[in-house]
Each structure stands twice: as C-alpha cells, then as structure tokens.
Amino acid sequence: MLPRYSLTTRLIHWITAVLIVASLVLGFWMTDRSAANLWDELTNTLYSWHKLIGFLILLITGLRILIKLRTTRPAYPSSVSQGQIQLAKSVQGALYLLLVLVPLFGWAGVTAFPALITVGGYHLPAMPGIPKDQALAKQIFEIHGYLALALLAVALAHIGAGLSHLWLKKDGVFERMWFKR
Ligand code: HEM
Image (cartoon, rainbow, N blue to C red):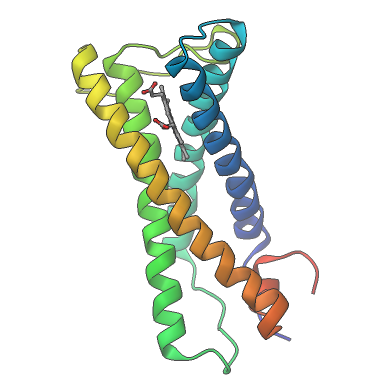
C-alpha cells in the first residue's frame, strides 16, 4: 500500500482548497459589484469575508510551509517518471509561492488604503512598513488581481493533474492526499 501524507497535511490541503475557491469567488464577485458602483450591505459583506478568509489562507500557508520543511513527501509509485515528478514539484512550488504572495499583496493593499475592517467589525493588523496611501493601494490591488489570476491558472493545472491520476492513471497518487484508500 502506498504511503500517504499525514492527516494534518491532508486536512490543511483540503481546507486550503475550499478557502481558495471561496476567496476567488468572493474576490471576483465583490470587484464586479464595486465596478458597477454597487456599494451596499452585500458588497461590504463580500469584502469583509474575502479579507478574513484571505488572511486565514496566509496564516494556514505559513503553518503548512513549516510542516513541509520538517517532513518528507511520501514516495510516488514507480510508474511515475522523474520528469513528471519534477513537473509536479515545480507546479507545487509555484502554488506555495502564490499562496504567500496573493494574500500578502491583498493585506498590503488594505493596509495602504486603509480598509482593515472585516467580519463582525474585527480589524486585521496593519502590515508593518506600509504607508497610508490610496494611490499605492490601487497599484497593489492591481498586482493582487493579476497574481490571483496566476494562482487560478496554476491551481487548475494542479487539479487537472490530480484528477488524471484519480480517473485515468488510477495509480494511487491522488489517494496519497485523500482520506479513503
Ligand atoms: C489566497 C488568498 C486570496 C485570493 C485567492 C484572492 C483573490 C482575489 C481576487 C480574484 C480579486 C479580484 C481581482 C480583480 O478582479 O480585480 C481580489 C480582490 C481583492 N482582494 Fe483578494 N485574494 C486573496 C487574499 C486577500 C487578502 C488577504 C486580502 C486583505 C486582507 C484581500 C483583499 C482584497 C481586496 C480589498 C480586493 C479588491 C481590490 C479592488 O477593489 O481593486 N485579498 N482578491
């Protein structure tokens, strides 16, 4: 039987996946509404949840990187070539990088704006070293949007590869990150 990732790693993986989908949906939805100048209760709620969930992703990713540095990845089955393993590692490396950069830019943007208020009136801490400057915030948000699109593209490649292992290759690679054998 193939070795699997630890339960903690598997839980963090799937919780992050759900949170990323939520932050992407909220991000596109709320910016659509703000572009249409719809500044009502719903738009504010979408922004609040987006900021809170995005910040949570940053914290969880920090924890995840710490765990990754202290553990080794379970072995791939012998049917997976070295080239495929290298490709998978590059895609996963890009995912880690974007999972840090996307929320960092979002956090820097709301610090510069400033718009740190989230769900239930709870304020995020300000990012140290970022001045209050709305023009700067606009530029940071633009980069945040492009990085979020890059995250979506890389995540889709990662999902495609995972599903091809589950449905086409049926080689047990997907099950290393799943809960049932
Ligand atoms: C992995 C985490 C995150 C993802 C995937 C994500 C994704 C997105 C997306 C897709 C948009 C819409 C971009 C556009 O169409 O212009 C957006 C906008 C925005 N995000 Fe995030 N985001 C994340 C984290 C954060 C964090 C941590 C914050 C703040 C604490 C934040 C604050 C914002 C704000 C304020 C906007 C609106 C910018 C504007 O109105 O121009 N995001 N985000």
